[in-house]
Image (cartoon, rainbow, N blue to C red; front, top):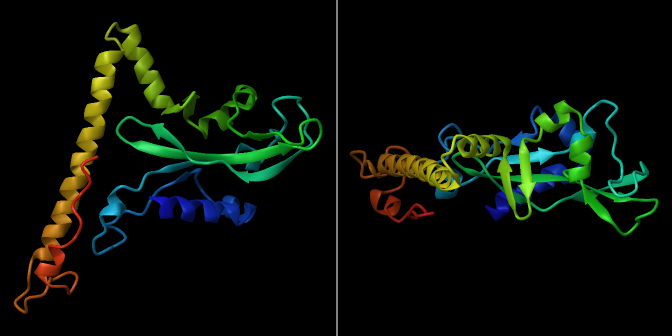
Length: 213
């Protein structure tokens, strides 16, 4: 996971040309089956990463300091990753960081600052479907669903149970896929080697167990 985050951040730090080539502000991890990886349990843990860089979009929405309103700001790298809860998985979000060059030279702010999001046009807000509350981040879908459950009288307790079941089911599906792939690796050919990887079934049995979380 740590290496995956470093890889994503390195791609973003390389320069704006990388962002301009992106066709989505969501970085999806490689599918372990489509990528034809032999077997790596971490492939099944890698999350989606939402990139928030609204000022890289074409249009009149330009960066400004949320404290003094000055447009004399410069890009200052990227934020740390924030964990975000989605309906059936956890994703991460990362955003552009800026520094005010006029009145707050030692103050950095992030592009997902509340003051910036409140003034952002709808198409920019649509590109960042995340709501932050203190340490917790949730997707817009989770927030809307939670509000609907509360307005319907179901309460937050049943909704939390529902969310927990969604995450558990997704984890079990990934574990089943991993075990299925492992079973294929352990299926020996007449020569005593795995039909897929070329390694022996005994070697395949030494692959790591799937995480319980």
